[in-house]
Image (tube, rainbow, N blue to C red; front, side, top):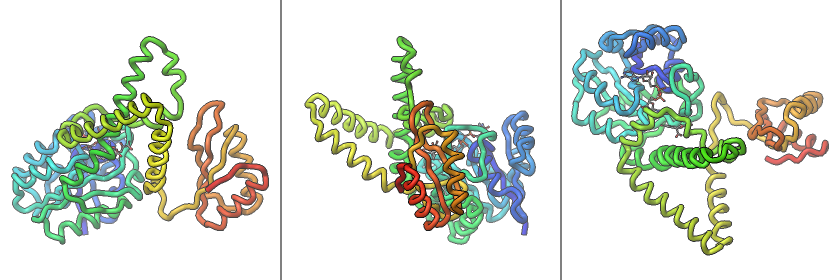
Length: 364
Ligand SMILES: NC(=O)c1ccc[n+]([C@@H]2O[C@H](COP(=O)([O-])OP(=O)(O)OC[C@H]3O[C@@H](n4cnc5c(N)ncnc54)[C@H](O)[C@@H]3O)[C@@H](O)[C@H]2O)c1
Ligand SMILES: O=C(O)C(=O)C[C@]1(C(=O)O)C=C[C@@H](O)C=C1
């Protein structure tokens, strides 16, 4: 059996999906580019089997069409597709970070012989473009699908089956509920990160020490402030109503901190930190490129380069199989944390005992 996949927009997400599908038995991935230089780039980067500047050629005989363009372009592409000859039973899906507007559009423009199933992989990065694409981006992530009642289970099943190549976990959610939840856990955090960076950027104009001293905490909370401006402009405008409500709640969270500080309410501040830590500690952890779960052990690192070799050697000479090693906070002259991952729980336990006996502070 042959499967043709048309990828409309081969950037971070479209490129990563292409890498998941390309080379699988019977699958060909055709990228659509709106600019000549992008077409050449898509081919040169090797993420697609072929690329074209013609939308019609890209989708001709396609079994699946993925719309991977910024959210503000989704409706226009959907409308163009509805006027093109599509293969009977073809599935059109998108990867947009909002789902209500494209779902409403698909309700209005009924496709004749194709089906639309909204999609949103809950994985990404602050980087953009095909150069940032990765075959393991979606591994162990959730992948939201928002089929309408008009979509037959058979079509939903076909898309889910194809998406198994991403190694993501499919979850079915209503479009409006999706936008409420993703507004809170993704869109609002991006707004907060950008506002925080811009606040500090303004202070830095009068004193460059701000930038110089900005360390782990600032970097951790602001990574996503480097995200693509066009992609995020479209997401925020598309989820505007939800964000306006969320920002009201955010302002009241900030007011409560203002009040606690004004009243020197140390207990209130402690409670806020404790509650946040408790909730954060139960967030599901997801790792790219992992098939089975790992058993993790943590230790402080004073001098990372020397320590890495020393610890790896100690484990090796004691026949303890280390699967992965990562420095979580790597700041010059400041102790960081090393995460040691093991496939077997027994290896982790033995490493814990060994490193503790050698004087390392270790914890699980
Ligand atoms: N960035 C993330 O973390 C993330 C995660 C999940 C979903 N998404 C969604 O994925 C979609 C794509 O985002 P991305 O992060 O891959 O961005 P990107 O900038 O990396 O990719 C966008 C692609 O669309 C192409 N494009 C731009 N204008 C176009 C046009 N007029 N016609 C055709 N193609 C055009 C670009 O050339 C690029 O290849 C967005 O809808 C976004 O909401 C993003
Ligand atoms: O990890 C990141 O950089 C992301 O921004 C990924 C992220 C998110 O906010 O979690 C961003 C947008 C999405 O639509 C899905 C995932």
